[in-house]
Length: 280
Image (cartoon, rainbow, N blue to C red; front, side):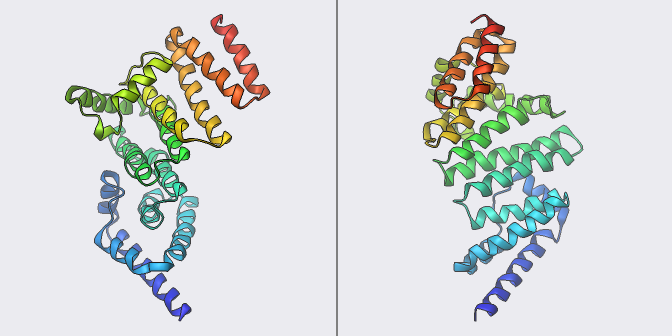
């Protein structure tokens, strides 16, 4: 009986894979616009798996690793979406899928607009879906903050200026309407960020990196999670200090707060260097 059920499971997964891959161009466009929306076939198969969902997840993880090693990121994006249906309360699933969308798939796209669709899809997958299922998981807040800091705010992606322009439009639209719910942001918490670190330019991704890292810090209990989130905060503030030295004092406070929680010699050296650089 067990062998028969496993065979049925594998056939169901194979059928689902065929359904997703029967038209790769259409599947890829759909994934970029709404990655997490399950098809009726997906819902039917997931519901029918019952207690065998764990086995199905293992099969899909194995296949996803194979696709990633082969650099087949478009197919991987579709397949990894199934993991979010099967294991919505496993944070690693959301982090893995969003990373592939925003970092791996996006860089294979030919134009900044195409890249932005995938970066935005990864952002929304974490913020709108992953955190709705796992609202107290600091790792997902870290991944979201890192996406704003490194992918959108940094200069390593040649399309970063385009991402920043698109993000500015979303912020300006929310500001004009007074409705921040599409961005899952709260004005009172934004005000708290301004008060803690200095008035932010909310049209720039750096401000959102601070916002989401601070949100993660509020639910983080393990020292390693708190250190990672504080690291994002002080790295963001250090970058802001380069443009505006008025952020230096807040940066130093965050560096010292991080050292108190995580007394590491390298961090102490960084504090000394930062004090000397800004005369603090």
